[in-house]
Length: 98
Image (cartoon, rainbow, N blue to C red; front, side):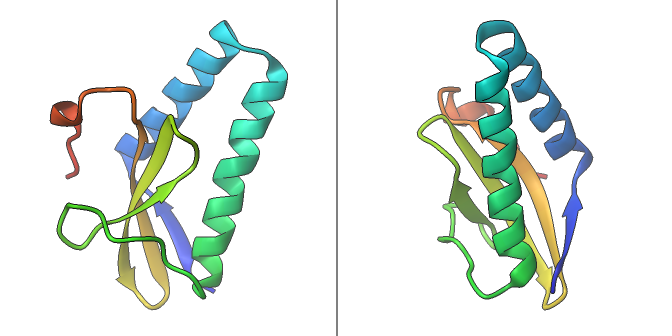
């Protein structure tokens, strides 16, 4: 099992998306989003599957939906860091991965 570490930026991204969904959509959509994130983090924890490499060095990308992607880094065999939860509708120029 790998440990999942959330960067401060990814936690802000997560909260921001949930806030948006609560305003614009229903609780059902919020719950679906949370379940999708939990499913991907569960896969990352198990460590038997890694998603495709991103265009950024040493980062992978897990597409949650056409609107949302998770950028993450494998730090070791036992640790994965979630760097960003990105709204794909935003300009890629705004994507900062530090």
